[in-house]
Image (cartoon, rainbow, N blue to C red; front, side):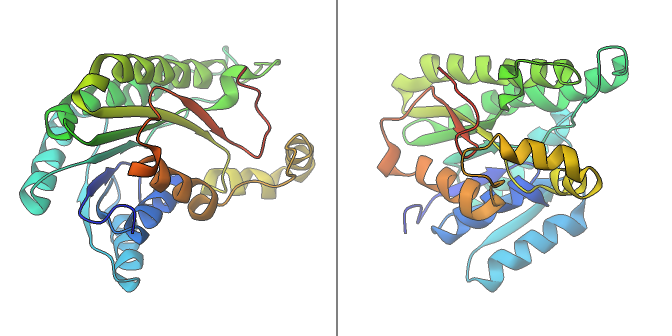
Amino acid sequence: MLLTGKTALVTGAGQGVGQGIALALAAEGARVAVTGRTLEKLENTCELIRQRGGEALPIVCDVKSLTSMEQCLATVLEHFGGLQILVNNAQEVPLGTLDEVTDESFAAGWESGPLATFRLMKLCRPHLSGDGCIINLASSAGMRWDMTGYGAYAATKEAIRALTRAAACEWGAEGIRTNVILPHAKSPGLEWWMENRPEEAAAFVATIPQRRVGECEEDIGRFVAMLCSGASGYVNGQSIALDGGQANLG
């Protein structure tokens, strides 16, 4: 298996893309710290991993709190003895037009997105040196021609892309690779949108060359597992769209 002997910390892993990534990492032999705000969801992910023969630990963590992240990392290090993989997935999403998005919503998106990514990367850096991998999550929303309703969300995700590139350049010589993925996947939020706005969803899917939305584990998680492995040892500082060919990153 690609990740035997490695420990991964995945934020927002109680459901959706984060859960899919946690499952895929564990399937390749990684021990996974499954973090998020709702213990019941975290325990469910861990149980799925254990049913497959993997090892996982649920840790309640609020990424908007520096203290909570510090405690989470301390628990990971105490339980597993080290850390080689960090996946920054959790984020609150500030959607709506600029007039609709409140200061509070935008601040929450910023604190849970780029600020949390910035903080957790720096907290984990000393433990990742030598053979570490950071995967951050962004979005192709920033590449939309019509940004109506996506400005605040895209702003937080583009900030994460900038931080990823900086970390890749500044820490690459230490043996830490940092990349960012831009996924389309069947998260609970996207599934709700597709069920409740079928016409809009159908138009969206029609813009994807492969004509489907990705699966959280099979399409997103498995790629992340490969990206964290030695098979991708020379991939660093890249923005990689996992979207069936929809976005043109140039």
